[in-house]
Length: 75
Image (cartoon, rainbow, N blue to C red; front, side, top):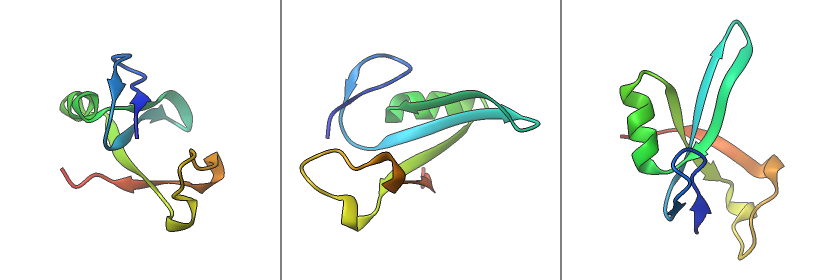
């Protein structure tokens, strides 16, 4: 599935990753990015997780936001 990376603004395929930066409960960064940008974020010490979807939400259409689950990256 194609998507636009919120960091590099490129059309990407494959896995999506969420990069999050927060301090004392205040969120400073919350982006959906491609694998390359996820790797850069991890090198900078930012928290990055692979986004997965529940089996019920897999369809030809994008799943509803309430069915998105964030899972740890295995990289």
